[in-house]
Length: 333
Image 1 (cartoon, rainbow, N blue to C red):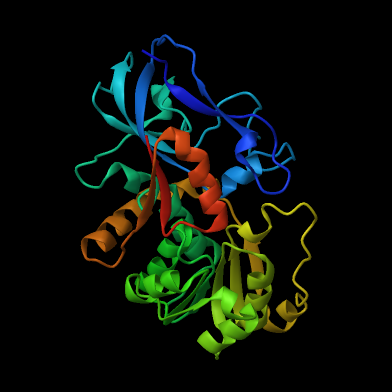
Image 2: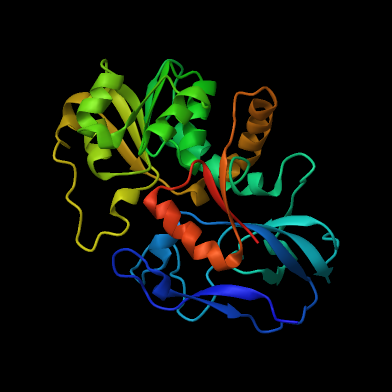
């Protein structure tokens, strides 16, 4: 019987990552210590932020180490336990993805109820993804009832939740951008966006003005680049921009030019604020309660893109960077 497998970072990508930057290897057997659990992972998350951790540049999170398994969100079943309060058979959420089996302290897991929602939901709409959208809108952007909201990367994991949560919180209009007509249709027909456009159909600034001719109050940014510049150009008086991500520049080998219209923030008294979900964990309980109600009454829907097998985990990650997912990208192990 072979040992569980894990994906290790073999070399630091320059520009777009390739399969040669990763290696799938068998992990060494690990005995449990007191207070630890063994988890057979069932689903794991692949997210755009992981690209930054593959670099050794100083950032908000420690880089992945070469020759070691990467990590990220995962949900699995406890197969062995030497910890009080975490029983064999329990499903738990933890941070040691990118491997088929994880051994970790019980303090690093949270038991989840998969009779209420599938395991994958705790990686997406009921997990860090959903909290990111909620915190960015409520605390960072200070969303108010009646605001016009623009969300870029709106068919992705965070963007799809952000648009729906904005509507639930009273936005008068929610506009989304996406990279295909299929995704635009999904935003309009499935997620309740009021307007949406394919950013490949023209200049983003023109497309945004067409979708929101009277301007926007809030921009939830997942893309950066031309989307950020367009949002600044459409910002109304007192507008707020929450910077969640900038996937358009994650694989750039040269510094990306900044928006050319920052001076417009003076006349609009606009603000741009970057944020990390890790600074807002205190909102988790509030969000979970509200999200449960929104899911129950149909206000909040989620869609997932699944890839099967740890041997295809890198394919799934590269797919996220290319925008191949609709909603949350999840690897089933």
